[in-house]
Length: 114
Image (cartoon, rainbow, N blue to C red; front, side, top):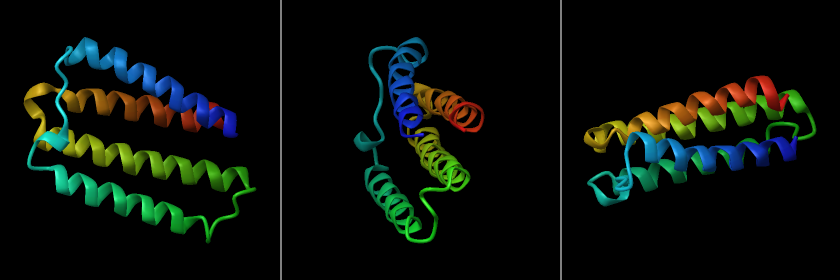
């Protein structure tokens, strides 16, 4: 399971570069360069705190529980990223890259990881 999650991170990193170049171009926008910087920081820190606290309540040796943990963590994190891109970087179409990566990651988690 750990290897398949690591492969997911590698695949999504490479796809982020490729899809970002195709859709947005070389000049990619960042939410941290807009008014949404503080919202982004607070949101991601909150998501991480909730995710780390979930480890006290789930059995990390249970593959099914870990599948759903990664599914929800990935969906919430990339969904939040997509929302921020859509609100603050609508003109750059950066949100399309986030949406495509969200869909690819969810399909990978549901059908390949487990």
